[in-house]
Image 1 (spheres, rainbow, N blue to C red):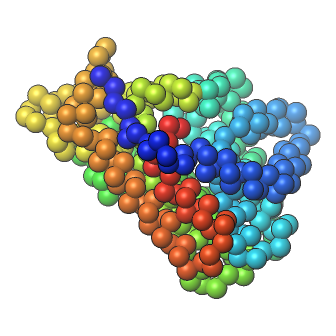
Image 2 (image 1 turned 90 degrees about the horizontal axis):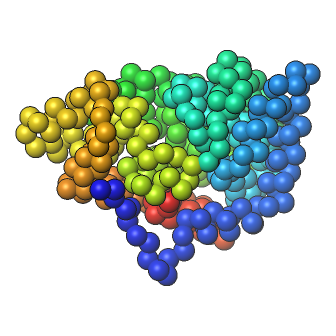
Length: 341
């Protein structure tokens, strides 16, 4: 039995609608950012722009550049610097996706074949390195050493998060705190750096800069918690992802950490150790994992944890002057917990 995630209120504004509204309000700026990105994909080696363009043009929500633009605007930054930063952030994100898909041996992203499947693992890793380098060129163009420091530190943190995830993979003794450490580094660090950087180029005072950092960090944690819950929901097949990917790879996400803690008796504990710890899985194991999670209300509890982080993100912006754009960011955080993709 597969579980459905918490249903939205019929009158509630969905995450997709809030994201679409934010995207529409930034349409002109996003177009300028896309031009910057395309300009920086050029290379005398034809395969580089081919691989990079394949991933970047595949779409995505563009949440990180949108947040970068929004934070810069709310802090009064001149338009050019947030554009450069938004492009840099998107290139860093694209680079990490190329690397992630190789590490995870992924076959699908956003409903399409991954770049490593089409072009090869070596090519994907090297083009990812190229995108990182281009991102740093864009950071330098902002003329801000603080920005360079923040985004370079985030890039290091993301790599640490990837390694930490490998260290916890298939280890059924992994704790919630260790999992949050992985999520904070692997996913939330770039969101935090994106929003903080926008505030930096707007010369925001320290409390406001910190507020944008906290917004991005807590949004990123909440967003990943929901992603990990979606992996145990059959509706994820509609977003270009196979339900159960994390289970099959032995990833220690919050749903399985909670389920293992709730295991009743030696047989259930043996089930989790065999399927996740040893990676020995048989037909029907994923369905049983979902049944055990449903019995103990694991997914609603994981979503409650995500909601707490989302509320922390929205509340962090209380020190920022009221504005429609601030409200959009707050709504984006709160609605991120109830989404299908």
